[in-house]
Every structure is written in structure tokens, then in C-alpha cells.
Length: 267
Image (cartoon, rainbow, N blue to C red):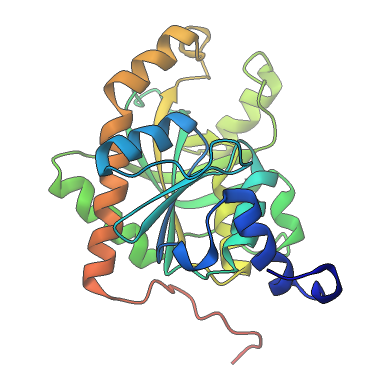
């Protein structure tokens, strides 16, 4: 671990900070990473795999199982950006975000899966990583692996764009809802665009599989304690299982996840 005198560049910093945030030594990280922002997901991951949470008191608790590491990084785009920066210390072959989202279409139902083809950068954090003209895109090969595993496990999914925002409480705001309708997005969340953008900036192939946990465009669809408990009980385990099996599939296939070449100059 670096001392203060040697913390001269980003790599020095993230190699020191990743174990500090997670409690896991660098050499113990798996080559494939599942990201979540719910401790319940991490607990369920452990129940499914036999893993144990390394240190619950850390800012980003994690668990390891069979070459996969799941990290609970917390809520919102700053935390999403931070975990992608920190992961540059170990450069995983793929990082898949298992997040919850609000369904913006009438056809969305609780428990639906959404496989984003892109994310709209409405959060602002990603502007520290890429110019605003650059779209937030997932790694195609990773998303293709997730798609295959969803169908292999007997589920279905929607594709589309997700709008990522910093606002958590907006369900009352009719002007914001009208704006969302103009964007024609499938879903809204607080992390996906940041993970895609910061992942690309850090040269980490990144993807996402989102679970519809509420329907915030209508008053009766706003998330409540009761509806959230229903989602946890009925749908979360399948969500995690798909993520685990998708990364195993990607690992077995052995293909590069780099959908775009991470080059510093134009060719």
C-alpha cells in the first residue's frame, strides 16, 4: 500500500483506496465485477454463491465467489463514478451493473427487465469524464452476453434508453415528467449513464441490466415500502442470478468486451 509520499498519480491513489473502500486486497478481486447499490443484493449474492461479505462497515462492502466480485457502491452518480475510478486499480475484464429503475412507459410492469442500449447523461457527473457530445454506451459484447442469459434462463426483457438523473424526489414535478416524455426513454435511474461514461473513460468494459421497481409517471406507481418489498421478494433473486450467469458466460466465451477501441488519438 502506498504511503503519502508516493501518492503522485491516479494509479497510486486508486490502488490505495480500493482496498480501503471495500476491505478487499487488490489481488483478491475477481476478473469480473457485479455492481449494485443495495446491501440486500449483496446479501442475496452471498446466499446464492456461498460467499461472505468482506466488511460491512466499509463504504463499499463487497463479496467474492468463483472469480466474481460484487460491490455495493451506494446510491447516485458520484458513487457510481467513484467505484469505476477505483476499479481502474484492478482493471476487471467486465463490470455489470444490476440496478433498479423507474419504468417510464405504460407497458412497463414491476419486475420487468430492461437492457439499456444507451443512457442519457442527465446527471452531470459524467461531464467530468467525457465531453457532453459523447454518448454513454455499454460494451456491446457484454450486453449481448446478458441478453443471451436472460433468454436461456426463461425470461424476457425490454431494450431502450435510460435517463440518468441526480434527482431522487421528482415524482410530483409535472414539468419534469413532461420533459421525460419528450425523451422517449424506457426508464430512469441515478447511475447507469455515469457507469457507462466513467467506465469508458477508465477503459473498463461496462454494462447494465435494470429491474423495474416502480412506475413513477403515475401517482399510483410511485414506490412505497410495500411495493419495494414486493419487488425484493419476487424479482431480485432472478435479477442477481442472471447477472452471475451472464458474467460466467462472458468468461467462458473469452471474447474481448471492448466494443470500442480505447485509443487516445483518432485513426
